Amino acid sequence: MSTDGRRDDARELSAGGVVVRDGEVIVIVPTRRGAQGQRVLGLPKGHVDPGETAEQAARREVREEAGVDADLVEKLGDVRYFYQRDGQRIFKMVRFFLFDYRSGALEDHDDEVEEARWMPLAEAARALSYRGEREMVQRALSAISRER
Image (tube, rainbow, N blue to C red):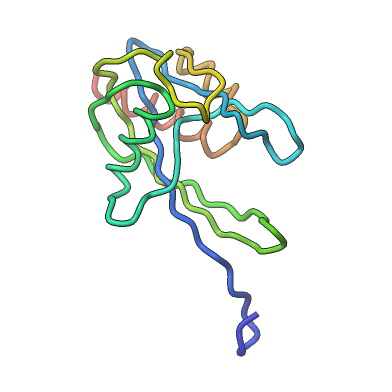
């Protein structure tokens, strides 16, 4: 608590990508488990490094966690939530961007990821582990529909 009685929460900023190709999106299974030890189905994302923009971080995380290069289309939105780490409450914001797949192979992901695969967008909007990420895929579906 601060001296005036308000809670001092730590803050984290991450960025991630919704990479699409032909009606599909890249999803990943990270090696890190969820809060209850379960496998998680998610989108590529990670911390924004010092001196890096959210867009740059999202592109880097897509490359590292999914093994692909992609072209930025637009910002989709932010997912905000709190979590606990070592007894401290952390406020986290993840800024997501829509990307078009350009090149690369999903097998070329880093060791933080067990599996990266393509999944139909509509299926991912139901199957992803976290509500905020499902919403970002839904926004990607809407953005793609507007383009047609």
